Image 1: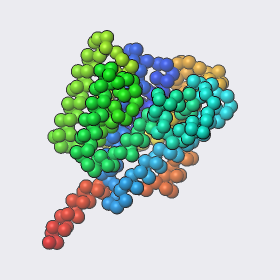
Image 2: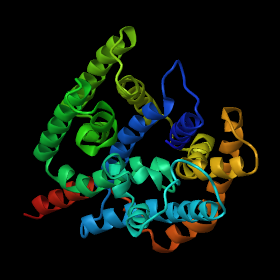
Image 3: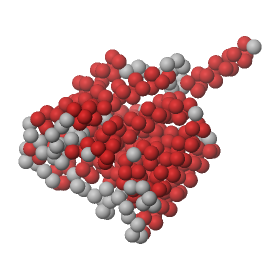
Image 4: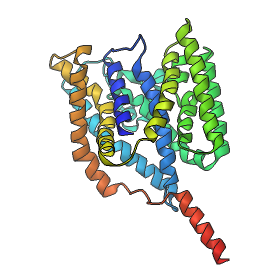
Length: 337
């Protein structure tokens, strides 16, 4: 789904350039779709895990996927900060805890409590912190479906309290895993043929349509509640459609190339905004220039950093999904008996 990921990263970029759509923040809806997509990707990854050392293999794969490009983008942002870039997100004098938070990523997700956002070198990565927390938990949840259902229900309860204003709507309805964990877990159900999974997704989508329509048609707006609802309403059908596209030929090549750029565009667009501002190019009208520069740097980082490291250190996926392998072993065992 590389083209979809690049499109979502572009929406995040536009939102950070101050561009809205019908008065709504497109980046918020894009992040919600990213959450579901992350759930889908790791659930597919988990089905193809090796028979032995599954947890170690999974965490290692996620680290090699996320960290190399993150460190490249972080170094670029640090260089711009050192050369005098100006932004609210790098406005405070950093302490050791600030540097550690930027290296560890996860603490950035709690900036609403720590004030970390005044020294966040890659501002969109608070959402990457949410994603990393989900990655830490998801192998245990996928191995224990009852726990996964319980976690989804608890998360949805927190989300509902946030939508009602009992909890902060922006924080618990969009930014913290406690409130959006069910969105990630909904993504793990995508592509599953069983009736229960399909019914759960259909129910979530229908509820989101009703809720989104109610928000759009009235004066019920709290920070980002409408954008979050629209993210589910639009995101689920988009993911289903992209799942059905052929995985071969020119289309697959385009998907792969777009996917190679998407993460880099997501990480690098803020430093690119700062660089262009330092050169005298600022404002929403320069969004296309930010995208081009971000995409070029993303391609450079992928070719010179990610790809060589992946080739050397990132383990390849097993050719046979673990579920199929286990079934095959069970059949052989039964025949032997």
